[in-house]
Image 1 (cartoon, rainbow, N blue to C red):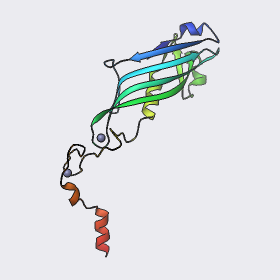
Image 2: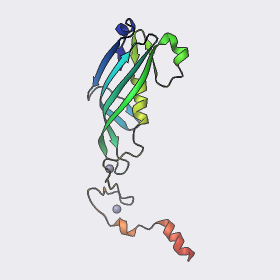
Image 3: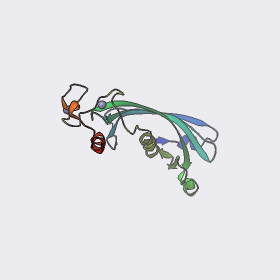
Image 4: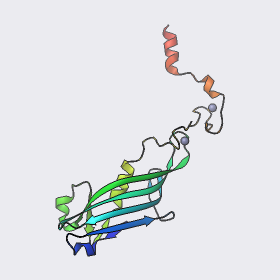
Length: 166
Ligand SMILES: [Zn+2]
Ligand SMILES: [Zn+2]
């Protein structure tokens, strides 16, 4: 996901807008079970003379696995982001900056930064719906679609122990 800032580099105090769209079928990385189906990036890059501050928005359609029923479901993702584009000749000065993206021969690859932003903002326990009933831990039936008799026999081992204390 590279942007070309060659023109902008020649024009200090100007800015340039970018719009990147990747649709279903474009090759995308799997982020630990999360698939990016499509992604749209809008950003504005400024040339302040030395660095190129950028701010933008990520809109993506992700496929995630529900942590309760294990079904794949569609998750719309949206986030703002900031980046500091800087020519690779200044690498030593900026390499510790979290949002630094280096410009090599007029091009900056935003993907490593965007991937990190997406990954850091994903839900820890993804749910296909807040009401998802999940799978029965005993027979594995999807409780969203059917019921089983297991539930009544379920005894919490902690209560068992308490009973024995009496
Ligand atoms: Zn679910
Ligand atoms: Zn069951």
